[in-house]
Structure formats: structure tokens, C-alpha cells
Length: 303
Image 1 (spheres, rainbow, N blue to C red):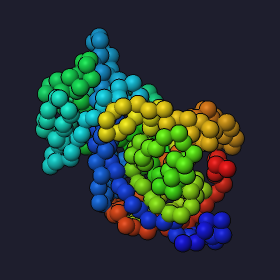
Image 2 (image 1 turned 120 degrees about the horizontal axis):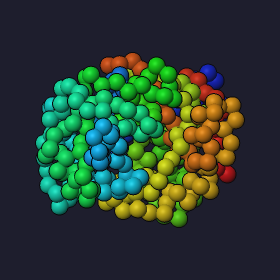
Image 3 (image 1 turned 120 degrees about the vertical axis):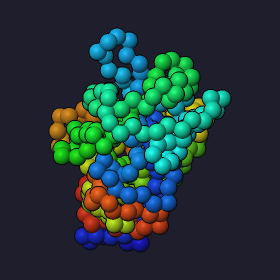
Image 4 (image 1 turned 180 degrees about the horizontal axis):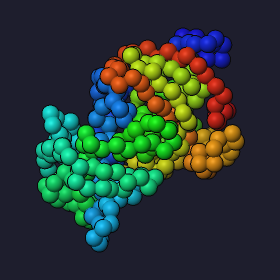
């Protein structure tokens, strides 16, 4: 594989070695061999969201995430025809049908209000038991539309703010060698996992392709506290917060808009936030990653 440091206008960026969607925002991952590009990113990704129950009429349910409720990591949603099978330890298993039409409006993250549908009382009872407080499950429908504030003209589901997140196992390996304890790539809840021989090379990618899909990298992705949570047990750890703070901290994001600077500065970075086109394109594990254009990274690689 050509080294990025000596590449021309394009080079081989490695191989797609993992595809992950999170059908319910904040819940356990589903690993796939292939996936189709949708209008909001990858088909089936973050199409459902757990929300609080409003405490008065006219209020909107707010997104429930692992940031405050690590128990969501133990909930396993599996896509089935027309909906999900959802299970959790000590709670059981239910099948939930995806509604066809909007009947509620809820708060997604970053303050967005999203018209969607309530998934019913059985799902509400399930998540209320998991979390220990009243909660409901909301679903996007064909009528739903959530524009992405960061990327004008784009849509996403219940993701934080980007249609697709990409991470590199070489960068993970480099980070783990500097950390006080091991952790896996699943902690970062990325959609597309690539593998190459060049840690942090993905930070320089601006345009690249995987399979039939074309991706544009918009920003390095700021990390919250969720990567500290074991995505199988829900237990919280010290890493990778310590190693990210030491080696991947953004102190300055000169050249970005004020809104972007506020999002990047004072946060740790891992992975890249991307748009993906065209709808209907298929990505499969084993596809080559071909980098068409690069630019200067937000952060230099760790020394």
C-alpha cells in the first residue's frame, strides 16, 4: 500500500474490515457484512431513539443516551422485517413494529426537534424497566426528516450530528499502546471500520470511496464520555478518556466557523465524520478504500 506521506492525487487507503449500525440510538451495535446507503447515512442506522416521558402537557421527550444512562449498552436491537427484536438481560425480549406515520415530536441531540412516531406501550414498559424511570421509544417514519446542521442540505437520523462515522484500526492500535488499559474499536461506535498500515492517516482524507460509495470527510470527530463505557457490559472505565486527553486533545480549530470551533475546541478527537453518496450504493466488508484527495489534519499524529 502506498504511504500517504508519498502519495499523489490518490492512493489505496486500506480495506473496509467492519460495518456497524446502531438501530436504536445509544443501544448495542449490529454488525453487518454489507449495507446500503440511505438518505440519512447507512440504512437502519439510528432510526430509533429512547426518550424521556414529558412531565407536563406540551413538552417534548428528550433523547436518552449512554452519556447519563450506560444501561442502554446492554440493550440489543436486531433488525427484523418491519421492525426490531429488542432484548436486555433480566428484562426479556420483545418485537416492536416500526410505525408508518408520525404522531409525536421529540428532542434529538443538539436541540433538534424531530417529527416521528411513538413505538407503543410495550416498548415503553421495556425501556422504563431497563432504565428505572419512565421512558418511551420513538421511531423515524417515511414522513420524518431531520436536516443536519453541520452539513447543509444533508439529512440524518437520530445520530449526534453526522450521517456516517469512520474509524481506523491502525489508529486504535496506536492509541491503545499509549493507554493504561486496553479497549476495542466498538467503544467509539463508528459505522465504518477501515484497516491500513498508517495510524491517523484517515485524519488527512477529504474525499474517498469504499465499494460503490463516495464519502466526503467533513471534520475530525469530537468524543464525549461514551467511549469509556464497555459496549457489552455497560460498565464505565477510565480509558480511553485519559489517553485521548493526553494525545488527541484539540486546543485550537483556527479556520473553522464559530459553530464548528465551539464543537471541536476543548474536546478529544477520534475518527472522521462523513457524508456518503449515492443513495442505493452498497458497501461490503473487504471493499478497498481508495483515497482521492487529502488535506492537512486538524491534529498532528501523537508523537
